[in-house]
Image (cartoon, rainbow, N blue to C red; front, side):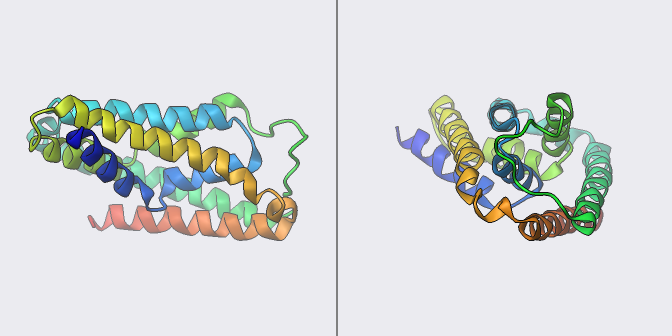
Length: 199
């Protein structure tokens, strides 16, 4: 039980900071668009990476020197493109929340975006595979530690995705969407910059 609690606490603290993945989940939650697929994909991806880290997969990243550089390059390129798309959306304006309307983005498009934001982000690997994998070695019951960290991921993403709808009244105004798009775009570009400079 102690290992599970430790895994939950560390997993939750690592995922709490706003990042590319969290910003996308928040946006989908506010739009009420493919929310379950979005949050489940994020949580399941984390669970897979946590399991890999606890199983010792982190050694592979250390054994292949160019792997981290490639991940940083691809991740930064995607974040720059996605951030630019958000800035363009903010420039155009006019978006409002229409909870009763049909989804404006295809399920395939949303799924591909959330997979890219997750699997092309080196920080996800550092947090889940490397850090959680290393800390798990301190516990005799590594499985309990991993399950605790996985539970934290599912709890966080489902709370963020479905809790975001509480902001629906605010996002009934186009100005709110423009502000959110600028914040998301800035977040994407700042993360991309950190990846490129190796921070």
